[in-house]
Length: 292
Image (cartoon, rainbow, N blue to C red; front, side, top):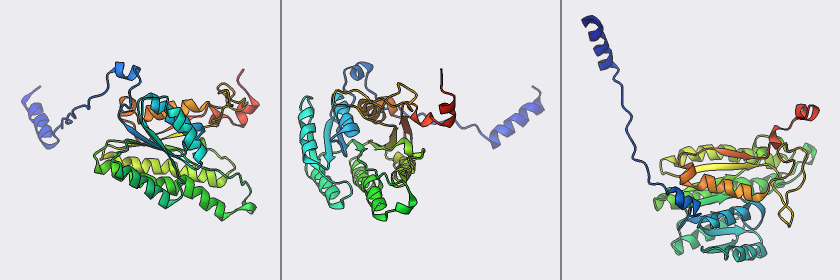
C-alpha cells in the first residue's frame, strides 16, 4: 500500500471511526443440572388468571413442578378449591382468589392483598378469556362486544398495569405472558372474540418495547383447539394436520414455562408462539389435495 492510499484510509477512519460494541456482562444462569432437577422457578411467585381449568390449570401445575409459588384466580369457588388441593402435592405456596378479571374492584383487591402480604410477582400469566359465537352482523350485540373486550383485553391490561408497576418498583426482571389464540390471525367466525385476540397480539408488542428497559419480558402463546377428556385423551379433529386431534393443555403449560424462564427465553420478548398442531395451515387447497 503506497503512502497516498494509507493517508486516504487513515482519513476515512478518522471521519468514520469503527465503533466497538460495548460488552454487557452476562447474567448468571441456572446450571443445566438445576434445570433437569425441575427448579427453574424456585422461590419465584406466579400469578395466573382463570386457572381453575384447562389451559390455566395446566400452566399452574407445570410451573409448580418447577418450584414456583402459585397464586391464581378463577370465577368459581369450586375450581379454586380443587386446584388448591392439586397444588398441595408440590412443595410450594399456593392460594386461589375468587375474582372476575373484568371487575376493577376485584383486581384492586387482589393487588392490595399481594402488597399487604409482601408478595412480589415474578411471572404474570393473563390466561382468562371468554368467547361468544355470534356469527352474523345482523345479530350484532354491542353488549356482547363490551363483555368480550372487558374480559379479554381491558381487564387483563388493568391487572398487567398493576403487576408491572409492582415489578418495576421492586426491581423485578419479570415475565408477562398473554394467552391469545390462532384467531388473532385466522378468521374464527366469532368477530368479537377474534378481534379481542388480535388486539392482544399488538398489545404484546407494544408492552414488550415499553417494559424492556426495566428487564421485563412480554410474550404470548396462541393455541389452536385445546381440549381433552376426563382420562386426559385429546379429541379427534380431522382438520388438524399433526396427530389429527385437539391439543392436551399440558403442552400450553410447558410453553408457558419456556417463555417465563430466563434460562430458555432470556432474550425473547414481543413474540407469540403458535401451538396449534398445524390447524392454521389447513385451507381449501390442503382439503382438495391432502397429504398422502
